[in-house]
Image 1 (cartoon, each protein chain N blue to C red):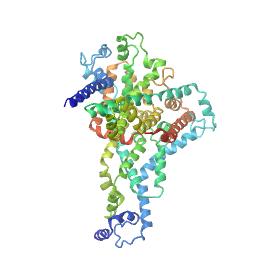
Image 2 (cartoon, chains in turn cyan, purple):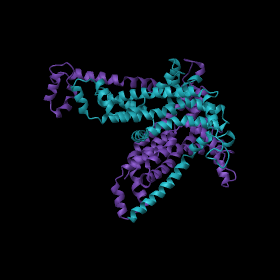
Image 3 (tube, rainbow over the protein chains, first blue to last red):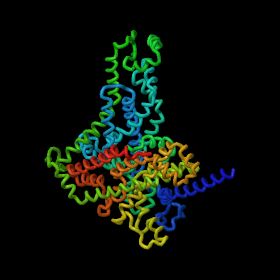
Image 4 (cartoon, one colour):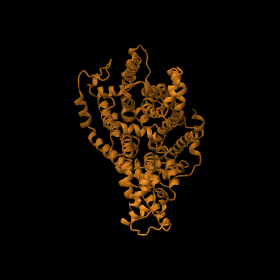
Length: 279
Length: 330
């Protein structure tokens, strides 16, 4: 009895220590949120008032959201681009993954190797030719162009392929014997079976696209098309010295994602553990 | 449909595998084996390519052709301003210029210093992972906490740290001064501290990812090993050194390689946090590439940087293949 209690107390103490470390670890976030609620002159006061003395939250946030920069538009652009990218990418990747895993055809393995090899190419090595190509075909400075750039994911294809491989071949074969073609088998049998993997990939793609700064920076020019990340970076350039507003803008950029993460926490973590790499 | 069902009943379950190429299709009333495989294989091929088509078209136009174009352009003197067709082949000239280009060399050196982030981060992550795995309550809570920076917008993080690291008013330096540090560093405003500041932020954002992967790796270590060691009276430190570290070495290796590769792609943080400055002290090849390509508009020259970047990443990958077998040791 005594032994068990000792262990529990030790574990409890370590939990408390770890919790303190955890709070220190995320203190930049706490500071950011707290500063976004403060009057500008209180932001840098020291010692830090973690709970604002004077609340200025409504003024700060309405200044960010309804001030001179069209934040609502940036938000809408980000939502549009992110949702459409996620949908396209999931569709493209799951189709390709199914073909690589469950359809036997000439050239499949060599194509798979080539696709896998492209995974090693850093995205920055492609920027210049992509930019030239986009100027020629008139995809530059458009949301469609942005969506396409993030829609062909080797990571997604590889990850979903692993799951399709896990489906017993006999299930696919018996569907065929019942007269189902590959399309019906894919939509009615294979896809429902890998739904958790699809959810994981969709959440990851959502997070990566939402946070993407590099692609919109290079492939967008019109301010009316700006995504949230571009908008915030620009906002910081303009209001660089007004920290309370900058923090309110940063909070606005991070919060939607934290919500997505909290909701799909298990999927995200499982997916990261499974796929390992960011792509 | 009825005929097909009947036909399928005749076939025993273990025959199904052989049937792959002779599947009975649609309205075919007399499923005679061996007469259909050619047609069937053809159908499979068509289906396969239809499923693959979007991925293939996308990858070809947005990855394969561009990377070939990058290689091609890196041997030319072309720039955006002169327009299409007006370029000359200059052989290795771009590369020769690059290796005499102080800023590029500086960027390369900076990037090699950045690699240090990976082993430091891994050490912290592994310790955290072991503690979280065995010694705390509310495991999931801690996973979420440490994972937060990894999923947060890099732009927002950069903006927050710009203020936190402010040389005079920033909370970090105010704290240091209140603790008695007379002249705290200027962080991102200081030539010698800007790169370390970037490294601190990189470690901070990557811990979550490494921790999660380590936690997965730790699940694969058989509990019996620890139990046996405990029977022999082994200390925690001994178990960590002799069981945990060697048995997670495949995970460590994986994280080391992916970590090294990802440090060659750190762009967002640098452009928002420091814009390569002060005095190029935080410039890295990807950042310099962006500058040369989209600010200076030197297409050929920036393509040469892109090619060097690719070669560096490939080198790390090939090293991975050769070293892997020696590294992973139990």
